[in-house]
Length: 196
Image 1 (spheres, rainbow, N blue to C red):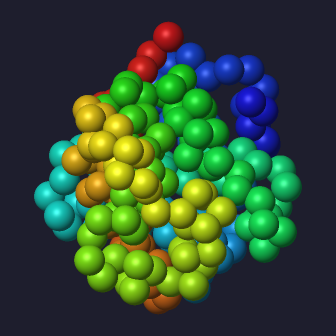
Image 2 (image 1 turned 60 degrees about the vertical axis):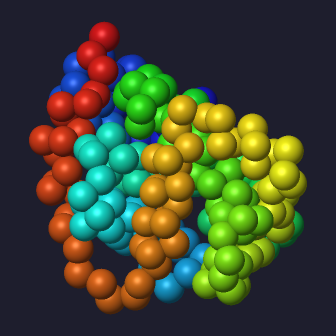
């Protein structure tokens, strides 16, 4: 999986190099439109902010911060959903983040779309709270889970964290909301990054 960056030509090895690469990705791609009233960067920062407000553990806060990096990895553009295409951004994000973080962070990222499909099927009122863009992407992602799909998802060791991440994902779409900047998470990211 190729990552478009300005300065890092080789694969990052140290925690600091990995942090620099992740921040560079946000710098290069964060201004992309997020099919809502916020940019991709604003959305991801808001998700992390709401995870912190919910007193989520650090691994969930970081999953919230990085859950949509799969959008940064897709070269087809930010409006690909308008063409009726599901980019499987959650899978791309998880595959990429495995080189950076452990399963406690990657697992909820990989399942945040599954959590949406689960809540759409089983939480009363959830569908009515979704934005038009979220409803459109839900359709592209397979729609609400069947009972069999839901049972399989409930057995995941990351079920609770993925559901919490999903709630933060839905909250993180507020135009004009002031939240901590990306640098606010540097120390937390460094604590959880793998080192080669």
